[in-house]
Figure (cartoon, rainbow, N blue to C red):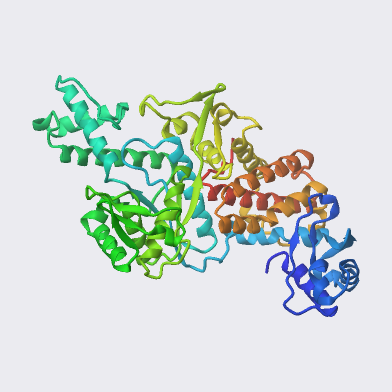
Length: 547
């Protein structure tokens, strides 16, 4: 039973007593101004039509009928046209802290996913260079979405799709080949669309060491294989530094070697949704919501980018993932319609809207008021490892997650490095460390704080009431963030709750107070620590006990 169920049940009983149906739903929300109470409901307005009465009259009747003791209500009033403001009894409100202590690490977990499988694909970078800060934002976003879904009972698989085929990989191989020829004394000509970073020289050097008989890279396929292998290793190191792990790495090249691209094209042709024009094979994607028909196979016999994407998503569905989520940069927005159109054109029972897309904007890195555009290693862009080395993993993760994915993000290196209240991740971690410090200074073992025998009525100051309400709201915040695939809600919740923690910490002592006050505040402190740690954990951020 959640903390709100007694209140909801009492309101439903009051409504039924006035003639409302037994399945009446009660919506509760926090008032913007805490002075108005702990909860507000528009129940009277939703009952106006079925009961044929004015909302204000219904609200007055509900207030008069409500069993306040059963609902744990200390004060209830009607405002405006019929809103009902509710203040809970102090002891009943604070008693919810015991639920947090009992739940521990499971506080905030839900069962909405019911064990159903979901695949979350993210990063999926071409193995043509180190991961840039845009990949970093995507890694943080995808990893947090996966964690949120897992917390709500989904069986989550994290998947990385390596685009190890196509024009960009061919340019990568030729770029390494050019550096090999440069090493051999030839004039270097990087191909158009090629790569210039210092890492290309490193790969060429490794190739020359591994294959001394081919120092000029005449075996271009061998060069390609080594380049892809080395950059996959490099990207794995980037991800490891960021604390991101994948369950599956899927190679685009396997779609060709296993014949899945050809099979998908044949199925699309058999479905009757393709046509030939100008020597190319087209998909009638406009029949499935796309803004124009798309070329599948060009006149030279090569496939366009979305064809292997369609084949890849067929494998997801056939692997049992009836729900699939793709986290991609906003520059992939055009992919959405054409991939979904291709999947629908196959007529194999894949639901509309499959897969789901979470698109994010890119990142601008600022230092000393100026934009940072290049990396010593990558050359043309800032890598995610550059940021981690400069400000630390926790700060990078939080800053990448503190804004909604589809909003522009400015990463302020100076702010991320600062140990001040202006740095949000430092401020949140400090709140956790301060609460832990209470137990350390008092030489009190946290596992002895169970909530048993606590007089919850002494948790009665305004700062304590607001803090208790915040941590009791945590499960609803997690569920909402998971349902909407929006980890920034958790980042914002942590920051707002940290402010409440710091305010409470500065205004109210825990140690040295009267025994029943100290006992209750220790219980609150432990519940706060549990909730903050669980929240930071969902974002992949450490919860330090000392700062």
